[in-house]
Structure formats: structure tokens, C-alpha cells
Image 1 (cartoon, rainbow, N blue to C red):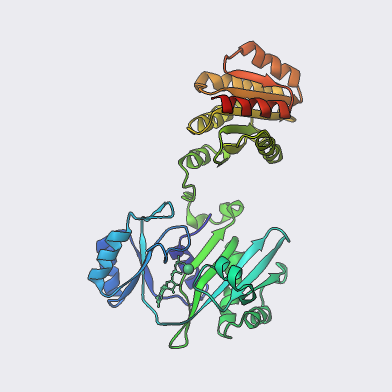
Image 2 (image 1 turned 90 degrees about the vertical axis):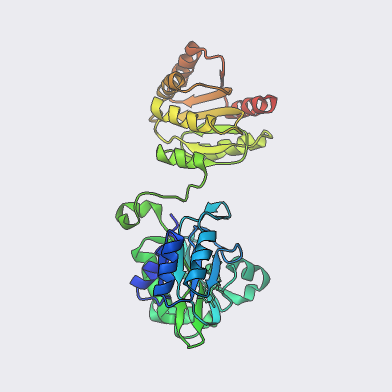
Length: 376
Ligand code: GDP
Ligand code: MN
């Protein structure tokens, strides 16, 4: 789960990383009041979980409280890269002399954390890395050793950051470990004309697997911008929407991934990833089918199950009972293999639903589902 900038700022403050004074407003009037408290001038910042707000008009300087109110009125409800602005943060403006970039990110490829730092902050780091790769340093961090003052000094030195950033680097690492984050990023970390170091913008991504012990951020995760993904998440399904036409349900992430590949190999595009895991109950099938069928792009659905602990007859039962509660509107191809496959197939044969057909191999099933999608 990504945190909002104002939540990241709250964490920075808690861990002793200097940040500008700031407060969150949900209405233009509140924005005006906050700007007044901040001393008149303010930076109005759209709170959306996406970067590049500055370029998209989501970061604006307001000269006085009345201007802050107007700016907030304009920003609230605005769309930034598909995210609707529901709140703004007002921060005390600072005079920036230099902008830096610092972050820690989990590098899954090497199973380690990486410190990324650059003396050229402000713009998106991907851009800097593309145009001036030598300006971005990447230093692995051994999770057992962490970032000591000595390590932080090496990172700052390698990136050409001023010595005052060392303390920030150490504290950022504390946030990463204690808050169960997969990413902490400050862009820009600035030096003001008075020589102060300040974190002007922050991004923190928490590890969802640690949600149980990070209760303070609440249960609601609004990172599901896609309504179908939100509906699936509400039902506890592992569903990712893609942009194809063949809906896919399988058991086990590996099998579902292979199914996506095989469908793509048949010249069709998968409409989603949906892993029902070990659960083959009628409820899970019905939930999965109803989410997939409500995607207007879906032309056919492929259920690919390898029976293990949950045997194929239980899966077939689940499908048959799901067909009682979900109105099937598109052809469904089912491939059952593994434990009790014959019994499972017999159950589906007996139900004899006109839109359901079976295939015995994964390739055959994918080919069939792709053909049906093309014919639709
Ligand atoms: P982002 O575009 O979503 O990354 O939003 P940021 O919060 O990083 O703001 C974009 C840019 O606005 C920063 O890189 C700064 O250059 C500038 N900015 C933000 N706050 C201030 C401020 O208080 N003073 C000054 N001078 N610039 C600011
Ligand atoms: Mn930024």
C-alpha cells in the first residue's frame, strides 16, 4: 500500500527528518485557514498516490490565504493521471538552493535493499537515470547490517550529497525497517538558501504482508483505482485486471501465470489474472465469475484447474453451484486435470450448461477460449 505524501511527511517528522510545516485540507475554506496559520504564503499540493504532480498542475504556490483558497477549490476534484484529488496539503514554502534524490527500495532481483541517491533531484529519477546515468548511484544495503552512520556517509559521498544528509539517510532506513516499508523515497530532499536540509516530498510504500502490525494506516486501501479490482479485493480475491478479452480463473499463481502465457500464445489476450488458490467453493467461483463477467471486454472465460488438495470434483461442484447464482453470459471453457479429474468432468457433463464446454488439455482449453473470444 502506498501512503499519501502527507502520511509520509508525518512519518518523516516522527523519525526526526526535517520537513516544512504543513497541514491537510479537505475544503477550500479549510485551505484558507491553514494558509493563514502558516503565515500567508503556502504551497498547495494535491494529495494523490501518483508522482509527477508538479508537472500535472498539482503543486502550486499561493501568495496569500485567499489565493490558497482559490487554488484548493481548483485542485480539489481535479484528475491527476486517473486519481481524483480528495484532499490537499498546504506547506510552508521554502527557498530551495539545491534539490537531491534519496531512496531505499527492495530490489527483488538480488533479494536486497538498494540505496539510490543523486545530487540531481527534483525531476523523476527514471529521467535522470536515462539521460545522466552517472549522476545516480545505487548501493546495495545488507538488511542485517542496515544503514549505519558510516554506511550513510558512504552513500552521501558517492552521490555527492552534502554531509548534513547523512542523518536523514540513517533515519530513512529506520522508517523502512520499523514501518515495514518496501520503498521510502524523498524527492526532492533540498538544501535551502539558509543551508537547512528539508524533505520536501515523500513516498512510502508499505509491505501489505505486514498490514496486521501496521494498523495505524487503517484497513481501507484506495490504491485499487480500477472498480473491478476494488470489487475483487472486497471479496478477498487475488485479481489483477489486464486489457484482453479472455477471462481467466485458475488455482495457484504459477498455473494462472502459465495460463496467461498459453492464452497469449494462442493469439488472444488475457483479460485478467485471478488465482482462487486452494479455494474452490461455490462462493469463490461465483465471486470470481461475477467479477470477470462484469468486465465488458471479456468475450470468453477459461477455468484452468489442477486438482490437488482441493480435488477436481470439488471444483466442478463449485462451478455448478456458482452457475445457480451467477448468470453466465459468455462461453466458459473448463479444463480439469489432476486429482479426481474424471469425477469433476462427469459433474460438469451432467449439468450440461449450454455455454459451458470442457477441454482435456491446457493448450486445447486455451485454444478453444481464444477461438470463442475471436468469434464473439
Ligand atoms: P511531485 O511533482 O509529485 O514530485 O511533487 P513535489 O512535491 O516533489 O513538488 C514538485 C516540485 O515543486 C519540487 O521538485 C520543487 O522543485 C517544487 N516545490 C515544492 N515545494 C516547494 C517549496 O516549498 N519551495 C520551492 N521553492 N519549491 C517547491
Ligand atoms: Mn517529488
